[in-house]
Length: 286
Image 1 (tube, rainbow, N blue to C red):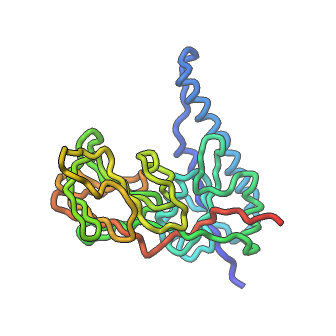
Image 2 (cartoon, helix red, strand yellow; image 1 turned 135 degrees about the vertical axis):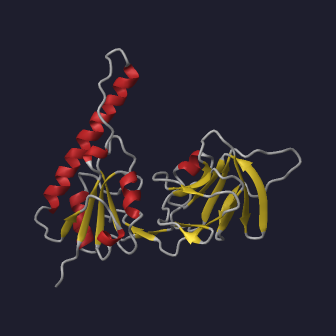
Image 3 (spheres, one colour; image 1 turned 90 degrees about the vertical axis):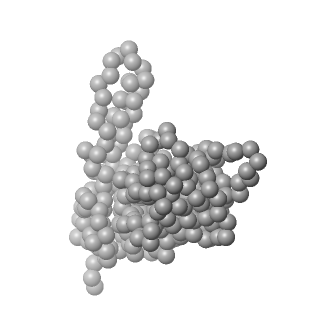
């Protein structure tokens, strides 16, 4: 019987922010330094725990740089870090399910990371026994003038001017309704991403079973007497945005290089036909 290959992708220690050496009379910098020290220490300890647990398993492969080719065919991908590491690896997962390990529970929210250093071994055993059930998470497919961008978004996509203080000019179309708008940009989010930036902007938190896309215009310029109906909402249809500036871009899941959307270019955001499967719920104890 062939081994079920398991791929572990840790956040490298060198990817953590460098340690600070603040002055003793600078309480804010001291607090930042202490938090970084805790994050580094917990991450190193968690990496050691995970390595010990899987050390004797010949099916486990450690991967420094995730890629679709390296993850293809794996029975499970395990991330060790926080949500940033999870989102990075998710970009390259097509059929491989993901299990996130929060390597620094004191400093990291770990929205997608069900496992903690203290629970990882039990969850891995549960997965081997078939007791873990994966959740299907909607993703966002982004196209610019018909060309699909390299990665789907799990959390959200931001359409905005590349200069943070500049206005974003565009036309937005959903279904049969079109509006010319001027704002600070548009958030488009999945339900699993609804607890993130779009919620901070006033959006609604949705259950992960809701596969609609949520959009919300940031700081719209509202001219008196001009009603707006496409400032926020939920849709099963594609969201189309025609850029009215050469400085507009799409930002996928909040990190990585932006994708330019020059003047006259059409961006299309829709539910991806490739959802992500992730383990987000621990098995109930009887």
